Amino acid sequence: MHPGSKVRRREGDLLKIDLGGGHQSYAQVAAGPLMIFFERASADDLAPEDVSRLPVLFRLWVANHAVTHGRWPVIGRVPLNPESRVEPFFYKQDVMTGRLSLYHSTFAAPNWERAATYAECAGLEAAAVWEPEHVEDRLRDHFAGRPNKWVESLRINEAAIP
Image 1 (cartoon, rainbow, N blue to C red):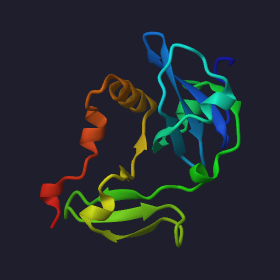
Image 2 (cartoon, helix red, strand yellow):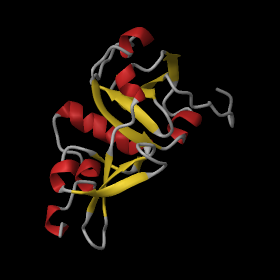
Image 3 (tube, helix red, strand yellow):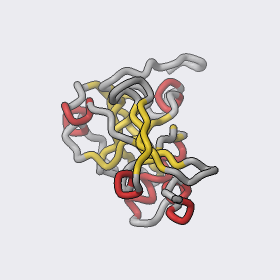
Image 4 (spheres, rainbow, N blue to C red):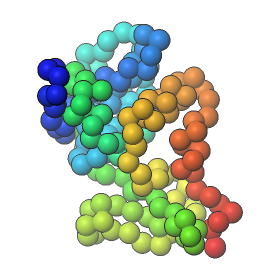
Protein backbone atom coordinates (compact mmCIF):
# COMPACT_ATOMS: atom_id res chain seq x y z
CA MET A 1 0.00 0.00 0.00
CA HIS A 2 1.33 3.42 -0.90
CA PRO A 3 1.57 6.10 1.81
CA GLY A 4 -1.65 8.04 2.03
CA SER A 5 -3.62 5.52 -0.04
CA LYS A 6 -6.78 3.99 1.33
CA VAL A 7 -8.21 0.50 1.03
CA ARG A 8 -11.92 0.23 0.36
CA ARG A 9 -13.85 -1.78 2.94
CA ARG A 10 -15.91 -4.37 1.04
CA GLU A 11 -18.34 -6.97 2.30
CA GLY A 12 -16.74 -10.42 2.29
CA ASP A 13 -13.17 -9.15 2.67
CA LEU A 14 -11.09 -11.40 4.92
CA LEU A 15 -8.71 -9.59 7.24
CA LYS A 16 -5.54 -10.62 9.01
CA ILE A 17 -5.12 -9.15 12.50
CA ASP A 18 -1.63 -9.01 14.00
CA LEU A 19 -1.81 -9.95 17.69
CA GLY A 20 1.92 -9.62 18.29
CA GLY A 21 4.32 -12.37 19.29
CA GLY A 22 4.13 -13.86 15.80
CA HIS A 23 0.41 -14.67 16.11
CA GLN A 24 -2.54 -13.45 14.12
CA SER A 25 -6.27 -13.79 14.10
CA TYR A 26 -8.81 -13.22 11.36
CA ALA A 27 -12.02 -11.33 10.67
CA GLN A 28 -14.48 -10.83 7.83
CA VAL A 29 -16.18 -7.61 6.78
CA ALA A 30 -19.98 -7.75 6.90
CA ALA A 31 -22.53 -5.02 6.12
CA GLY A 32 -21.92 -1.52 7.44
CA PRO A 33 -19.58 -1.33 10.41
CA LEU A 34 -20.17 -5.00 11.34
CA MET A 35 -17.24 -7.41 11.38
CA ILE A 36 -17.12 -11.11 12.18
CA PHE A 37 -14.19 -12.36 14.27
CA PHE A 38 -13.09 -15.96 14.17
CA GLU A 39 -12.06 -18.37 16.93
CA ARG A 40 -8.43 -18.77 15.91
CA ALA A 41 -5.05 -17.37 16.84
CA SER A 42 -2.21 -18.90 14.94
CA ALA A 43 1.43 -18.45 13.96
CA ASP A 44 0.58 -19.97 10.57
CA ASP A 45 -1.02 -18.03 7.73
CA LEU A 46 -4.36 -19.49 6.73
CA ALA A 47 -5.73 -19.58 3.21
CA PRO A 48 -8.84 -17.40 2.72
CA GLU A 49 -11.10 -20.43 2.19
CA ASP A 50 -9.87 -21.92 5.51
CA VAL A 51 -10.46 -18.63 7.36
CA SER A 52 -14.07 -18.45 6.19
CA ARG A 53 -14.74 -21.93 7.65
CA LEU A 54 -13.55 -21.09 11.17
CA PRO A 55 -16.07 -20.87 14.01
CA VAL A 56 -17.30 -17.35 14.81
CA LEU A 57 -16.02 -15.91 18.09
CA PHE A 58 -18.00 -12.65 18.14
CA ARG A 59 -19.49 -9.98 15.87
CA LEU A 60 -18.91 -6.28 16.52
CA TRP A 61 -19.13 -2.90 14.88
CA VAL A 62 -15.60 -1.67 14.13
CA ALA A 63 -14.31 1.71 12.97
CA ASN A 64 -13.69 1.71 9.21
CA HIS A 65 -10.09 2.85 9.52
CA ALA A 66 -9.07 -0.65 10.69
CA VAL A 67 -9.41 -1.60 7.02
CA THR A 68 -9.23 1.66 5.09
CA HIS A 69 -5.87 2.65 6.61
CA GLY A 70 -4.45 -0.87 6.24
CA ARG A 71 -4.10 -1.80 9.91
CA TRP A 72 -5.85 -5.10 9.16
CA PRO A 73 -4.75 -6.13 5.66
CA VAL A 74 -7.19 -7.77 3.27
CA ILE A 75 -6.00 -11.32 2.47
CA GLY A 76 -8.87 -12.35 0.22
CA ARG A 77 -12.62 -12.24 -0.19
CA VAL A 78 -15.30 -14.90 0.09
CA PRO A 79 -19.08 -14.51 0.22
CA LEU A 80 -20.56 -14.22 3.69
CA ASN A 81 -22.30 -17.36 4.90
CA PRO A 82 -26.08 -16.96 5.43
CA GLU A 83 -25.75 -16.59 9.23
CA SER A 84 -23.16 -13.84 8.87
CA ARG A 85 -25.39 -11.90 6.48
CA VAL A 86 -27.89 -11.30 9.32
CA GLU A 87 -26.98 -8.46 11.65
CA PRO A 88 -27.25 -9.47 15.31
CA PHE A 89 -29.22 -7.49 17.87
CA PHE A 90 -27.22 -5.27 20.20
CA TYR A 91 -28.16 -3.80 23.56
CA LYS A 92 -28.03 -0.25 24.85
CA GLN A 93 -28.16 0.96 28.43
CA ASP A 94 -29.14 4.55 29.14
CA VAL A 95 -26.43 6.06 31.36
CA MET A 96 -28.92 8.33 33.14
CA THR A 97 -31.87 6.00 33.75
CA GLY A 98 -30.21 2.56 33.53
CA ARG A 99 -32.99 1.37 31.21
CA LEU A 100 -32.08 -1.28 28.67
CA SER A 101 -33.10 -1.52 25.04
CA LEU A 102 -32.56 -3.79 22.08
CA TYR A 103 -31.10 -2.17 18.99
CA HIS A 104 -30.92 -3.24 15.35
CA SER A 105 -30.04 -1.06 12.39
CA THR A 106 -32.65 -2.54 10.04
CA PHE A 107 -34.95 -4.99 11.90
CA ALA A 108 -38.39 -3.39 11.41
CA ALA A 109 -37.24 0.11 10.46
CA PRO A 110 -33.95 1.96 10.21
CA ASN A 111 -32.31 2.23 13.65
CA TRP A 112 -35.01 0.09 15.28
CA GLU A 113 -34.97 0.16 19.07
CA ARG A 114 -37.31 -0.98 21.84
CA ALA A 115 -37.27 -1.28 25.62
CA ALA A 116 -35.92 -4.62 26.82
CA THR A 117 -35.36 -6.69 29.92
CA TYR A 118 -32.03 -7.81 31.32
CA ALA A 119 -32.79 -11.37 30.18
CA GLU A 120 -33.26 -10.16 26.59
CA CYS A 121 -29.97 -8.23 26.65
CA ALA A 122 -27.76 -10.68 28.56
CA GLY A 123 -25.21 -12.22 26.24
CA LEU A 124 -25.59 -9.55 23.54
CA GLU A 125 -22.84 -7.14 22.53
CA ALA A 126 -23.21 -3.48 23.42
CA ALA A 127 -24.20 -1.14 20.59
CA ALA A 128 -20.73 0.40 20.27
CA VAL A 129 -18.23 0.96 17.48
CA TRP A 130 -14.91 -0.51 18.55
CA GLU A 131 -11.49 0.89 17.77
CA PRO A 132 -9.21 -1.71 16.16
CA GLU A 133 -6.62 -1.64 18.95
CA HIS A 134 -9.37 -2.43 21.50
CA VAL A 135 -10.50 -5.41 19.40
CA GLU A 136 -6.88 -6.59 19.25
CA ASP A 137 -6.69 -6.34 23.07
CA ARG A 138 -9.93 -8.30 23.34
CA LEU A 139 -8.65 -11.03 21.00
CA ARG A 140 -5.31 -11.33 22.84
CA ASP A 141 -7.11 -11.53 26.19
CA HIS A 142 -9.59 -14.10 24.87
CA PHE A 143 -6.88 -16.40 23.55
CA ALA A 144 -4.88 -15.97 26.78
CA GLY A 145 -7.98 -16.80 28.86
CA ARG A 146 -8.10 -13.50 30.74
CA PRO A 147 -10.81 -10.89 31.24
CA ASN A 148 -10.76 -7.89 28.92
CA LYS A 149 -11.07 -4.33 30.25
CA TRP A 150 -13.00 -3.13 27.18
CA VAL A 151 -15.57 -5.92 27.46
CA GLU A 152 -15.90 -5.21 31.18
CA SER A 153 -16.38 -1.47 30.56
CA LEU A 154 -19.31 -2.23 28.21
CA ARG A 155 -20.95 -4.82 30.47
CA ILE A 156 -24.54 -4.17 31.56
CA ASN A 157 -24.65 -2.33 34.88
CA GLU A 158 -27.22 -4.50 36.63
CA ALA A 159 -27.30 -2.22 39.70
CA ALA A 160 -28.52 0.67 37.53
CA ILE A 161 -31.48 -1.18 35.99
CA PRO A 162 -34.72 0.30 37.35
